[in-house]
Length: 164
Image (cartoon, rainbow, N blue to C red; front, top):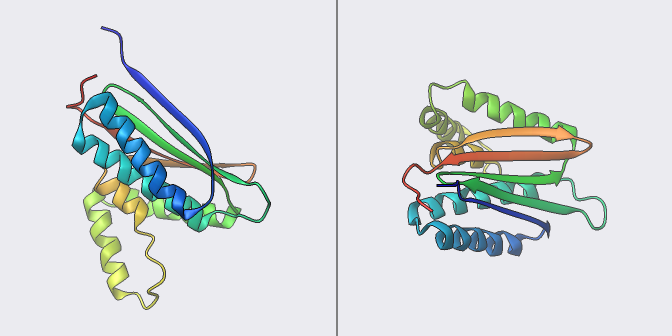
């Protein structure tokens, strides 16, 4: 049997209303392909968190700048990637967050540690919990890169029970 694959690649405007639209679209596409409610909820959560981070932390200084959402995979595996313009300093913060997650014994420990940090924080406007949530709840491996003013964040998830 050949491996079943899929690929979605969409340039989008950096508007908050587009997050909900794309989350529902990705979730519905995944359901249509695999009829896996748990997997579709996971891929939707990951898509939403990555898009929200891109809009919140992106550098939107020039007219016409876009986000790019790429969702691809094969039977049992999916990768969600979001690309957006960003300043180098914000990418350095992103790398710091990913190093912090990796420094823990597992994603659950990193998530709990971040929750404790938030509980002790005096700044109610910054949570930076999204990548921890993706790693822990989504059971994802998260990677990031930076090139020519564009940050790319990818989350890889596995769905062992999914059948095409």
